[in-house]
Length: 382
Image 1 (cartoon, rainbow, N blue to C red):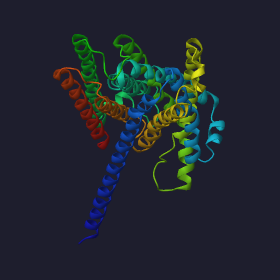
Image 2 (image 1 turned 60 degrees about the vertical axis):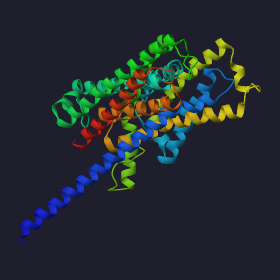
Image 3 (image 1 turned 90 degrees about the vertical axis):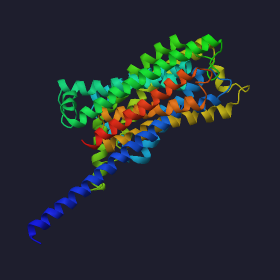
Image 4 (image 1 turned 120 degrees about the vertical axis):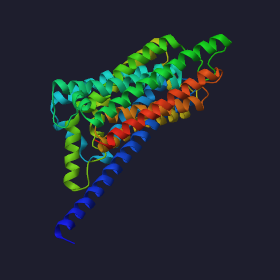
């Protein structure tokens, strides 16, 4: 065997090894996004166990864990000196990151209302579907006008095979959202025709639910913008970790420091609104009302809030494997929609409807699964 042949074999072996490693990174990214999606699609369930409290009371108690307590704890456990990174970051970056957090906070607030009025399945589908579209396309469109190294613009995606697959996955995702939304409309007609109320949601209101869901879907996309605005903080965390762990790839938890600042913004919006509702509805007494199961209420609210934060904890891990581009955001949102619809079926939110209606929502879920597979394939050929 010649030396030249040996070189070819070595190159072939190296290429195969690199290909396997890349596929493993993509697989891990998809798994992390799905775990995050499961957490997000499931977080509202513990709230169903809260008794004797107004919505604004249990929402802000859970929110304190989501936005104030758990994020810095996660950053402390994964990023030594995370507060030093925040303090040393340019004030304009911190302000912009916080501002997007404020806007996202409105989206998060109306998310709770959307699920309250439409149910876990339909509410999450509409909100997160819109969130996936805006969160995926707006940053990519922005980079068309402001090219940035390492960032994929919409033109870059449209001109490449992997980008075309991701955009196709986004289109399929939108189709799935429309189908699920159609199923929601059919559900309301079925329940009205039969004279029955939604057995799983006594507060079901399609009109106001759709309004708050649309607002939430648009503004919830600001979380993706916040991650992008605060990327310098994640970059510092990543570089510090790589200096201590050479040759071990990207830091899984680099975004945890950015979340702290974004969620300060989310806390500001939600705290203001919930305190306003507590005052207007005279529900401040909920926090100490001995007629309610206080310990259980605080535990379940804390569990809901912690579960909510885990979605972005694992989103950050998935992002470190797949990148914080349109594909990762679409994949994450599609996983949440899939899980939320699964819970909707489990809690019989679609009981009492015609077979055609039930078949329509199942078809929507199948289409969403297909969108996840297409986006995953697009990432694999990048």
